[in-house]
Image 1 (cartoon, rainbow, N blue to C red):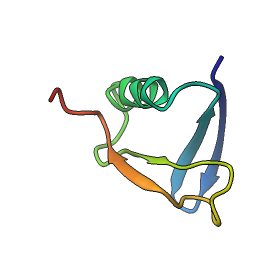
Image 2 (cartoon, one colour; image 1 turned 60 degrees about the vertical axis):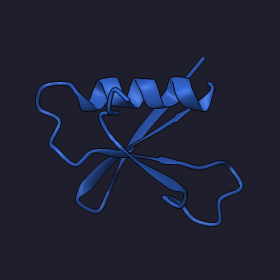
Image 3 (cartoon, rainbow, N blue to C red; image 1 turned 135 degrees about the vertical axis):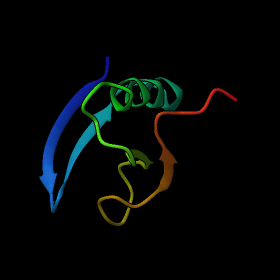
Length: 67
């Protein structure tokens, strides 16, 4: 089961999504990024609970391309 949590960080709104495989979480993030009203430039940061700092990790542009 995925867990969602959101908060403002500067001029961005950040959602933390956990509790599932990376591929599943990125698919959820991509669907959200494709919703009407979500500004262009959305991205996901793939990290783990051992990251040294919030927002550090692999950056993935959203929505995901159909490759």
